[in-house]
Length: 573
Image (cartoon, rainbow, N blue to C red; front, top):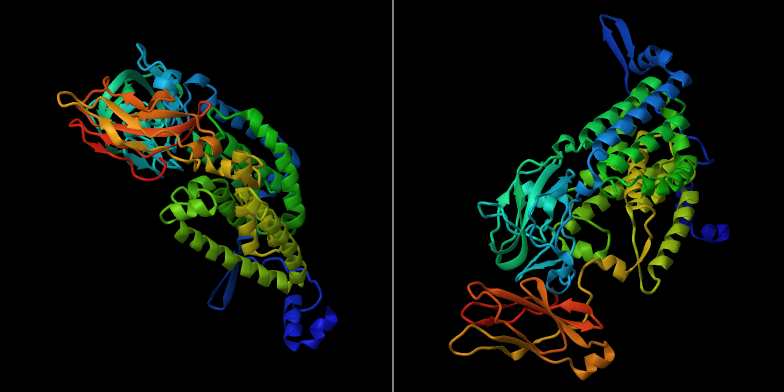
């Protein structure tokens, strides 16, 4: 290799540049920025703020005091978590997407799996905060409309605020003013059975979809639930509490860097688990402990390869250390809130291509990441370690390339993986390194506490979630609707399964959805329309079935009260 570079002066210069200034050398510790010096009339006065803080807080750095305050913190956190989750009956909790009705034929024929359609007594519930930011990741048919990248709320525009049964209850409650987007809240509702003509509304930053036909399950909110004593989502109060504790740790208690690192990690993990981004409601403690121990092993590896070189370098600068680390760590832990309005859900091509603004946002993030990487490369080169780090990342890149090329699998760069990959490049005592590694540690904590160690390789079925399967679609027959001259339409018909599709894909039946409710399953080629209310328009979607399992449904065909038929647009719904 050396002879190859020696024969090419240009390559030799590149090699020399990559090697840096010479031997591997440790970078100096940061120079204090808060060492203020004032000169007045030939007199100089210094204000070493960092040193003054160290002197003033020296009496509080006892390990015994830290142990006592740790016990106090754990007890306080337990009371916070109890007030947040465990004073309300678990059956009263709803998550942001809780609903009475499932997509397509998820409720079975005539909705029999989602009964009762009406109730005599109100249903009391409690909703978490921040539900307005939860959106549909895939298209959802509502009559002839297809909604996507918005919360699923249908109706609410009439004077009594009537919502269709598949509306997300907590987001509907936000629109109706029953709960708060920042603190959640409690409410009660009643199911009223069949309702016709759901009107759209635009209130409290929530826009709902209209539906001009009938649906067998609707609900309305009613006043004064009995569970209202413990309804406020306390994530903001918990965040203030945990940030205050972490500031006291960094500035006042100042334990050894390794202890400080573990404290920061644990505070962020349990805050995320109980408050800012829980896996479910109420927060499942057993799941949290299932990933906590593996996270500690990963965090120890991150300490060994990066944090042990940077965090101790700021021990003499408690104020700066608190600013750089806490100012970046907490946005990383709260990445779900920080990036709430960034239109990127998953780093896969299909998601980025479909969502408006996603590509622009991704380009901005990529440019910022490249700038930070170039800065770190400059720092690593000055320490004489650039060639070594480039070789490590080159090997890692080859491994990722091989994984990405495996057939039938897609490589997913989860944000906890992104953090693990980049943290080793921050193990140098500079302020930028401290900021980057603190933010990445927060991302690591958020990703693992919320999603666990999710696989970096996923199948197309896992990535699809509830999107269309890509299966073949049936067609309504050219005859479409059978009508006699004195009454509304009597039948809707469709074409039989072709021999090719029957043999290659195994279809042996049909599923018909009428007004977003499955009304027919079987092998017949028509459906009677006699039971429908012909004062409103009706919507029909059809799918093949194989042994009772449905494929994709067509987009909605429409039949108007005058009997006119509008065929479905191409593609699945």
